[in-house]
Image (cartoon, rainbow over the protein chains, first blue to last red):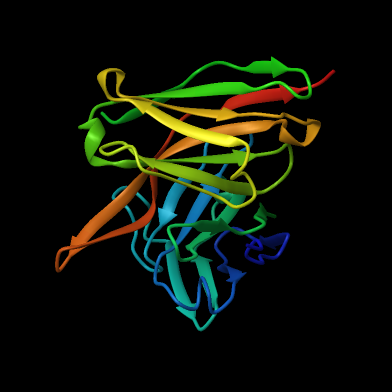
Length: 110
Length: 126
């Protein structure tokens, strides 16, 4: 299966809001509400930030939120902070007990 | 607390095999499915497959179907990922990850990967 499509990079100034899109197909993102988002710092393991499209694990800031429309999911980070600068990956269940990740988006805080 | 601790870095020649381990602690091993995800340098995360730690059932990505084997040792609360016929493109960091799941009306659903190992670098070079 093909990777989900994410913008290679996004940027924003401290305090602003940014949104990262994640486009799949009717076989993955469009069919299941099992879309998750991961934050990854260089040389570190990914960290779960959003699961089941909109849910936040305990301990994740409320500045992170998720949504989905059709075949496209989105991650929004409000009140951007310097510590948010990282790579972000979306992931979706793709049916038949398989999973697919996005290509990743590098977030730069200006 | 829940931890996944992976084995150390490996170097292999093309054509060889490598086995990476992932030792779990802090929860009941047999009640979760564990996945393997890899990331080549500067590249995206790539899902490889999973093992149900309770019954040993597995499922692999089509891309790795012919070369990957995931096993578990319940007495050691550890899973293993063996990748064979290695090529340079397999040089990557390999992660194990525990799945987040729930039951709804008796049906089992997996929704995300909530706990990750620290990663194991595998280098394939002649």
